[in-house]
Length: 221
Length: 221
DNA sequence: CGGTTATTCGAACGAACGTTCGTATCGTCT
DNA sequence: AGACGATACGAACGTTCGTTCGAATAACCG
Figure (cartoon, rainbow over the protein chains, first blue to last red):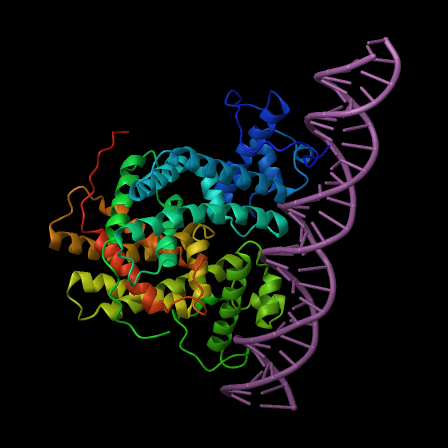
């Protein structure tokens, strides 16, 4: 009955479905896509189940055949997005050994996924705290894993240069994620420069920024 | 009657008031502070007027003596915060002529204000689109002004170096704002390094990042 | 075909929301 | 003292919310 008894399919692999017809998974993906767009446009709290129903062409009660609640719907969106993001990153990192190139690959992969799934990444960036309990824990763990992969790359870059003197690596990592996660606020793939151009510039600036050690002349905490 | 007929006081200048006693402005500031904390904790949509009333010690109906609606309350919070942020920045930029030092001052000022008003800056970063109509336009104009001040500083830095070859200055500016505006997601003034340390590191990395021109080897859209 | 399961939906529920209304209290001025 | 505006609050309003229920329809299998 509910989706808890059904084996979990992490990522949608069904391109040929625009409307709601097709198999169960196709219809689920269709509903999740509509829900993602609605939440990205209105925000999680303002995106009512009625609005999602309207956007997906399913009745209000019909939604509850696919999720046991609104929060579970948001969880599915975030879980799938983070899963795809992680798989995509790991895939593209295969065979790349140079730390600096790894970082470039990571930034390019992140922006490429962003450009292809703006709504999903906006929901993931903006609605981080809208989940509670174990749903929050699960997505938090995936985010943490994504962070860790990136942090380790930055670590290797700094170690290779032996120039990590006064640099707080946690701050550095968060500065990069700030740059990347803020993209959904301003970047429009239609208008601005190509994603690859933006990715290259961000990567260049970030890597060059790691060159100089911080000349801390400030006081103590 | 309503606050629209009352001359606008942009920034609170009344430190000696913890509870709700005092003049009209002191009580207004007290309520706005409680509202800011509540919205920062729950988000604008989940922060009900009843929750704000509880946090500020005022009755539900009593709130509507100070605002003519919930959205106006959010507007007041953002308007004051952006105003203080802008005034604070302009003040600290006085007498500073070197572009690179101007950028350092800007980053330090932003983080100092952030550390002193975490709730307000979180609300300003996270609830950008919760305002509508003229309220949105007004705060948007202030944000744009803040962006412009920063963008012009970055412009001067790049012009002085004559090294802005393949760098898209819009992307660069947004990358910096991403780093700064993402702070509220991870930085805890109590725990981490001092704000001045973080500010110096971010400024160092960003300025060093501007050194190298982007070696764009990508294709076109 | 009959029977069981899966899927869908209209209608409704209780709760919570933002807002309003009428009234009571307080301070101030004549 | 009396009158009036400012301030405050309890109670209620109408709406929207997430969710549930029971009855239909579709799909599948013996």
